[in-house]
Amino acid sequence: MVNEHDIVVQTNDLTKRYGTTYALDKVNITVKRGEIYGFVGRNGAGKTTLIRVLTGIANPTSGTFVLLGAKTRAEQIERRKHIAAMVETPALYMNMTAHDNLRTTLILKGIKDEKLIQDRLHEVGLDDVINSKKKAKDFSLGMKQRLGIAMALLGDPEVLILDEPTNGLDPEGIREMRELLVGINKKRNITMIISSHILGELSKLATTFGFIDKGKIINEITSDELFAKVSKEVIIKTDDNIKALSLLNDAYPKSVSKDDNGSLRISGVANSSDIVKLLIKSNINVLNFREQENGLEDYFINLIGGNHNG
Amino acid sequence: MARLLKLQLFRAFKDKGTIVFAIITLALGFFTLLFNFLISQSFGQGGTDLIGQLFSISALINSSFSLASTPMVLLIIVGVVLLYKESGWGTIRNQVIAGYSKFQVYFANFLAMLIILFSILFAYQALTVGLGFAFGFEFGLSTDAEIVGFFKNYGLNLLIFITEVAFMTFISLMFQNIIAPVFLVVILPIFVAAILQTVVPLVVIMNVDNAASIVGGFEYVIWYQSTALTISGLSYEMFSNMGDLFGAVLYDTDSSPFIFKTIATNVALSGIFLGLGSYLFSRKDLK
Image (cartoon, rainbow over all chains, first blue to last red):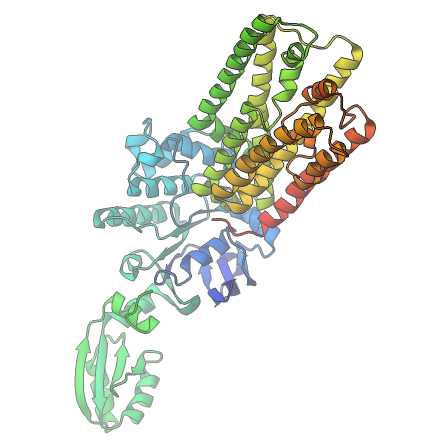
């Protein structure tokens, strides 16, 4: 039983509609304290919309959510003082230096200690611009992302919400950003909600995953469950698939599915020979047997039902 | 709210465009006085004719509120651009994420624009007073009635100025783009002011029947500014001078109904732009 205090975000049938299009369709997710919640979906799936609603930038059409225990709108506005977010692109004053951009956050949060500016810039690896006159508009995208995170970290938020923080970065930039976020999580033990359309990237960070497609949450699992599913898959054909399916469902709950070819797929199996032994013991003949390593992206694509993009 | 206001003032102070426009506004004040000085030297400064009255410091101060005056146009552009940058860069989102209501964000933007723009305008007016005396212009207020009239007019102009800033905030924050505010807050009012500046004298000169109602009609059609007097770009004093010159008085600007109407209209419009604006903004999804 999860203590209410341990829940950072909980949505209840949260819906956002634009005209006749549902950007969010009765979304229910739970983010617990200390988690790194990876929010995965294709472009346009509804990730940013959910983050916009949680951060107050957009209003939900229907449904409710609890943010750090706050249920009413007024309470949520107050609680947002304890969260920080970078939604879509980093929101920077492009005509200001990194130092002055951080000063705007100090002003907003009523923090007097200007030394924090230097500390945060150092923390995100922007030491070069601490005393620089370079304006934010002249920063690379990676630097802008880092500056956005530095601004978000001022005021020691309990929750950090990042929308596609690696979007547009080159592989080196992606790696650096990942290391930065892992470092922040380790150092500060902060709850993070990070969205991305690249599951492989998030898998190196997140402890829990929420998969969204066409505005609907299609799966919410822990990283252990995810890796169990994607680590190994056994594909098997027997002379009695109905009996085999029933048997395997009992032995491996929620791990067995039947594909279009009539094969049974069992995911997250540590020892595949156990399956064969079980079937033979029940007088079921194995006609075909093979093991397959599934990648995270394959899992994701299978989950959302195809290889289409859009 | 105080922090939001402080943030707005900080970013305006850091904005090169705002600083440059403020300097241009003040430079224009200097050149306007220099130009007037050179003309008054030709016509004889300080006379009792129209030119002498137009070049009085008090007339220049009150005419600076008019949308037909260059300082005011520059100020409106400064305000529109400053407000747009918040939406364009997405920095307005930071304020909501940081735990401020959209209602507070709306009012902070309005108050900040009011403070910033009026500060520049006030500096322009102070420069006008200082340089005006240096150039030897008269203040133009000799009797108690004229002094009272000056402050009364200044107060009314200030009220109209507040309405304009409220309107500018409303349009800028509701549309969150640059095109709508530039068209609705800058180009259209200037266009209307230019037309009225032509129409008002023509109506008077041609001695059209019901001149007052014709000009007055503009007052209600064009609601950006509450009075045809102001939207035509004519300050109280300039308008009175024209009335005297052409032998017609369309408005008795000293009358209580006129003053009451100006106050009531502007208070109502400001209330709509601030009340309705903040309500709609709080229900709006930010870009």
